[in-house]
Image 1 (cartoon, rainbow, N blue to C red):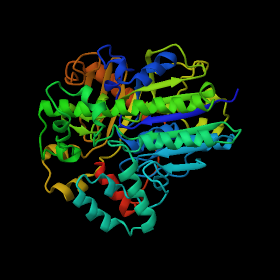
Image 2 (image 1 turned 120 degrees about the vertical axis):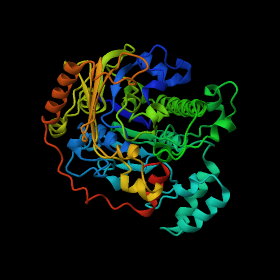
Image 3 (image 1 turned 90 degrees about the vertical axis):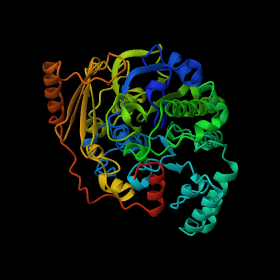
Image 4 (image 1 turned 45 degrees about the vertical axis):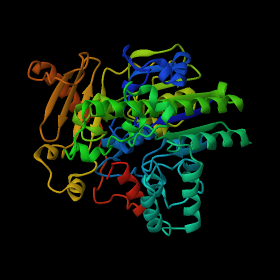
Amino acid sequence: MTINVALVVLDTARALDTPVGPDPEGPDPEAMPTLSELAIAGTAYGRAFATAPWTLPSHASLFTGTYPSRHGAHGGHTYLDADHRLLAESFADSGYETIGVTNNTWITEEFGFARGFETFWKGWQYWQSDSDMGRVVRASERTEKLRRMAVDLFDGNPLVNAVNVAYSELFQPTGDDGAARTTDRIDGWLRGRDDDRPFFLFANLIEPHIEYRPPREFAEPFLPADASYEEARSVRQDPRAYDVGEYELTERDCRLLRGLYRGELAYVDRQLGRLRGALRATGEWEDTLFVILGDHGENVGDHGFLGHQYNLSDTLLHVPLVVHGGAFTGGPDTDRLVQLPDLVPTLLDATGVDDPRLREQSQARSFHPGAGVEPREAVFAEYAAPQPSMERLERRFGDLSEHVREYDRSLRAIRTPEYKYVRGSDGHEALYDVRTKPRERRDCLADRPERARRLRERLDAWRDSFEHAAVDPDADVEMTAETERHLESLGYL
């Protein structure tokens, strides 16, 4: 039987705030009812980990089955080079209709991610255009909107730009950053589809990404009883300014932001339910492998950070992963270690797609129930270069403290079910017993040097086991001015 694939990324979703992680003290299943139902009917992987803590390298790993230092798309080289085989190309060459919908600027053709997609939509645009008016849409004050409109309207086709702004300003639901429009667009595509081919669908829903601004009715259940939606929305959300110490967050501020963040997750869960309904209504549900995952997590005041840069904490790497359909039944799997690149061979196994080149490229392990592959004993992660760089931080904030300059390093980590070892290019080392709570608060390297030595050797052996991408840091993609403005507004530049 030919099977469809629907691969949905909940951008910036961390396992800690979803009901499918291994922690019995996690959120109530009713916080994300669709994801909870899919986890029970399908398989939820409670120990799933990203290879990197932010969008570009993590999606590149998901699309190629390789680690960041192998595919080379990271803070030191913000482009996925064309010599890598992508999952969408594999399905396209195997006779699938391939469709992608992105709501994150990094995941566009500009950065090398559209290859293999027959149709590729930017979810924030009504008319697809190289000019992105998102900076206008995201401005909160009317005067600022008008000022940005005057600057940006003539960057490309003014009529198309005006329509895209009107579409976002007048028709998108309050608090929606593209998820509802994406669901509407996919629903319309499914209902109007006249194609006998199976399909490979990819969608990125960006709502859990900062700035957190869920609709009121989704946020209020997660806020403290004595807090209002207005108070929560008034808390400053500027991750880079917080990371460099320009302002502080109180414990109450963090609780309010976490409430908004959980509200965003609840909102995208509603859209997952609508996607499931669209697949059922068009008769595709029984023949579709439905995969939901986070590409990375988030620090909401955790470990002294806001956002998802400069560290490899589990709050950034531990992500939800649920697979429903085909052989994936039986509820939670809380023991098996899984990495996002593992989806590449797993999806090939699940669909019967034959792609020797992609399999040879992949560094991953299939976790398909019929693959007979030994489970992982450890997972690995990399943070190849600070993003944004120290130079960009200096341009915005001026002189940086010595504490902030410590972020100017690369990081690698190895994590087993019991321990996590992290090492920086500056010689920094840390060892955490990940079984203890609160997690990753106490560095136990001095107490367990032998354990650290063994993990250090395993990390070195892994690093030396494959060829690293030869990337020229001066050969980055030349972003359009609008793309730079969009990424800057998301805290990346």
